[in-house]
Image 1 (tube, rainbow, N blue to C red):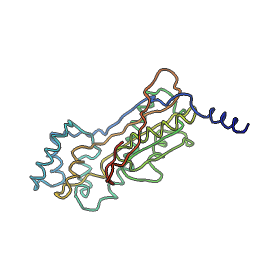
Image 2 (tube, one colour):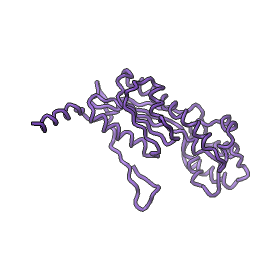
Image 3 (cartoon, rainbow, N blue to C red):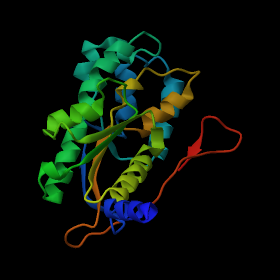
Image 4 (tube, one colour):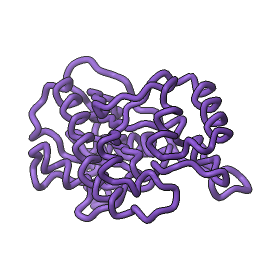
Length: 255
């Protein structure tokens, strides 16, 4: 009898349908850089124009990337005020960290507001928040800062995920799917926000991998509302996703 009652309780707690993406929002910093002119800009602001061979390699990387433009929080004005960021080895962790712990949740807020507007439901219906970033570490974390910036309920259930890397977006969708399908009525706000200030530095002949990052990555945030049993027609079910460490490597992952 007890087992039957327990199953009834669990059935009542779970959603009846699969989790779906109810709304999506994105945001980028206002500062835009164009790939065609970025090598000149990058080597100028980092005072590295005395490295023409390295610059030529970087130009090829940018050209082969097929990227037309990127958005970045770091402007030339910010770099002039914080010259240590432009150095390859000069200590600058505190300076970088002070920037990202403020700007990462702010950019996430912009994306979240757009997702919430598309969703069209009151903030009070958000039951869970998942925030993911590889940019900095803070306590209270960016998840708390986001709830404060949005004015969410102080009782909203929060999950902060740091240092997930490239599979962070898929991971937060997987977590949100599990939450939405196992908690009837749950509406999960997921936010990924990245600002590459932590990785910006001058070029080095011994670290070409750093140049690859400078040729590819920009700053941006994406948000989504995930829920099961939605009102009205919607339905883009999140794909299941999981990380997998590639055999015989400690640094490469697939998702």
